[in-house]
Image 1 (cartoon, rainbow, N blue to C red):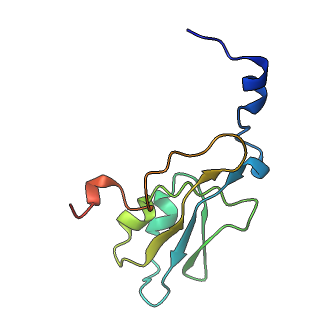
Image 2 (image 1 turned 90 degrees about the vertical axis):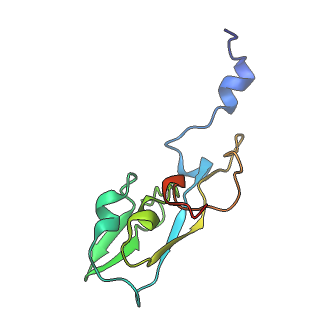
Length: 109
């Protein structure tokens, strides 16, 4: 197995440095939202707050959304959509797989 060079070691992203990572974003349709809070329970990144019976993303710096689509797939009202994918902003990039969409288990194809 090859070893990393010194330059490669320096260029490896620091996952806990917010300057190197752009979190994902989701949008909530409050007209459709029933206030069930399932999105908060299912979020693996713990990025969704639930206040006054309405979900919202945590503020910048606390939002670690990975745009996985779990909240979108499990929302019974269809009130959530992914608007921005998770990206590395420094030396490495997230593999581009097209527009964010729900997990393939729930895909329309």
